[in-house]
Length: 135
Image (tube, rainbow, N blue to C red; front, side):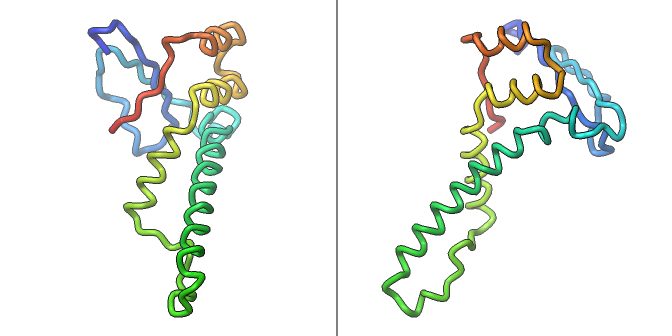
């Protein structure tokens, strides 16, 4: 980020697990006020809802695939079609996070009143805005 001259504002809720004491050259860390309602917490405002919808769609498709594979086998018919292991669920989370668009995130910040309308329009129209997963 430093080479590219990019700066990031990292907003954290006031959870004791979040340590904001580290100094990062191109990252400014701001803490939300204690006991902030979900109106200001953009993840609660819609990003998590969107992520859950994508995840549940993926889970439903998996259940249909499992049901189709065991429909002819009476011995396997008692299998829980929704059962997945932790690794599979983690892969689904990564895949579904990739499906959440930058527009969804920007709109959640806009609805929370954290981004002025003119800045939101700039974000929506910018070709340089991109999400990068921490893989």
